[in-house]
Image (tube, rainbow, N blue to C red; front, side):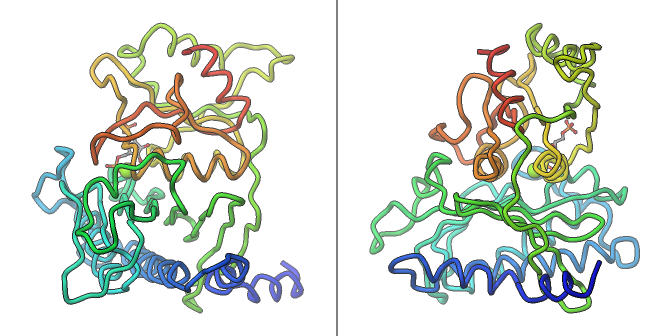
Length: 338
Ligand code: AHM
Ligand code: MG
């Protein structure tokens, strides 16, 4: 990398970028900027612990089972606590929800409450923690809809994705990146661990209109509908005019599979199947935030029959079939399943 590019990158921290963006928002109070400072801090704390995996005692399970009926990994629990402790004291949030916690998480009365509702998957890709494969944190930000004098309630969480004011993820991979959108554009920041700051490395990310990669857990094929099987088989045929065959890539961490799809295009799918009629992934802190990012980058996200951002949730931990990626690739799966 040339010195001038380095200078450009080091000129733009995540904080400065958000401050600049907020300057153009009428009536901005600085609360949003502070919320992102807290998210970045939590991300740095989690990244530092992830990077010590194998050296300190953070691998393996806690022995607990979470609300999803899954074994809780030590790092899941650490990430969950890091986010809650940093964000509850920040003063920007009035309610939180986490994949690891059954009910919405109130802010203790000793802390001030802000107007934002934050939902997160603290450590996505749990099955990859112990094997040194990328994992991540996903977050979704809404404004509260209940009266500011009232107690925040579940209804503050159960809002459709198109009402999100921001969404993002932090990927703990070969480097740590913070990717977010407020709806207009998507920006990626890479952590320089020697400085302890996220720097703008991927401004204005655009997803290719069509890709060459499909990403799905084909081990589930026997449980899929004929339509889903036909959709996947179609990627493997030899047809130059239709850009076939596609390459197959599947990491098993949504954040990592989505990050690749965002940068390179193509499609990630986690279909419904005959055992899981709503698929596996959760709407509020997996599907909806990733859908907001995809859309802002020129891509799309769908259940196959409905846009992810249009779904009004009825439950906090609601699951949803998810097809997300390049706009043309998502349009195609909607044609097959619609
Ligand atoms: P998690 O949030 O408990 O880690 O589970 C969600 C993960 C996603 O990251 C990933 O896309 C999917 O589950 C992988 O599921 P599978 O192992 O069934 O392919
Ligand atoms: Mg997850």
